[in-house]
Length: 404
Image 1 (cartoon, rainbow, N blue to C red):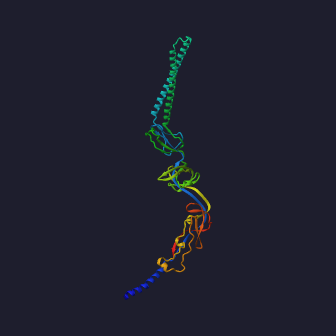
Image 2 (cartoon, rainbow, N blue to C red; image 1 turned 120 degrees about the horizontal axis):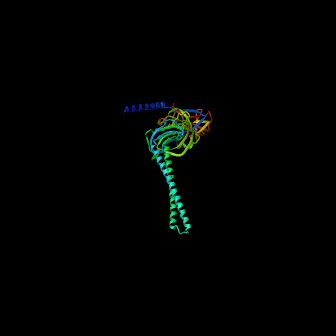
Image 3 (cartoon, rainbow, N blue to C red; image 1 turned 135 degrees about the vertical axis):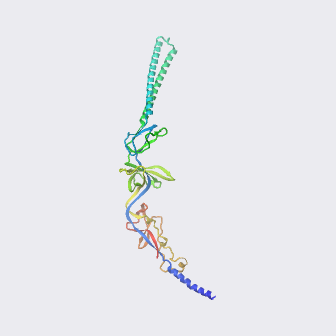
């Protein structure tokens, strides 16, 4: 029994001592060290980013409208050609034979026309003779039946003559078609330009029965290109014709190329449920550094502000932490906080809570002061201030909590 009483006395002495020691060693109030920035004047540029590829302004695929075997090719990749220049020629033996055949048919048809015309003249003269005889004989000779038969012969010969003329026109058209096909066996460039691709070799057979095969691709010029980019539907409302842009390509990572918006297309394209709109940018390529097919990342300038009051966007996002909002609590927690409340450690007054209006916090004499502002353009890093701040004001952009 004495041992039990002795142990209780020891506990009564030890427990208060432990509580006092914990209270003395417990961390003090949290103090905040604020990160600040000065309000300044500057420029803001709002831009839209999009990717696409470079293309020639005018590109022509040259094919053949006739079938045959390629006899000779006269140009290669990167060759400069002029309009009308011979690029390749097909074997023309069959086509030449068709021309000869068509010409013979035409000549035969013309001879038939001459024969038909002679038959018409003969039938008309015979009819005129019979009609004269009928008139002289007061209708006694020839018979009415012979007279009608002669008239029918005239009409028949005139119809044959017209048919012969039609056959001549058909033969002439056929001959002209064969001559055109013979000319098309010589494949010529339709424009002045540069050969981008050649997909034909001598001896190769080309068939134009179903669709025209492409043999050459010619770009009119490479000093002017166009960049077609896909602009996201969320940004397309800000993109307009005439806006300036710049872009980079993987081939020249340290170089930026200028461009301008030439066309914003209304038709949409959907890829993996993402809606985009094609936008065409005009690109100068005087040094021929850029090549068709290059992938480019473009930055389109959609709005700009110069020499305006700007504030870091982080200042608009800043909100004081709970430790600095002066919530009524002691720096002691739980049971210790209820038992021991050190003097002079009451929480600071709570700053005004934020609202839906744009606002920043100013730091004056170590105190946070909320300042409502009116904002304009923002690029995500800086925001234009229309009213509420002036250059030189110090705004809070962040804080670092430390323990004392």
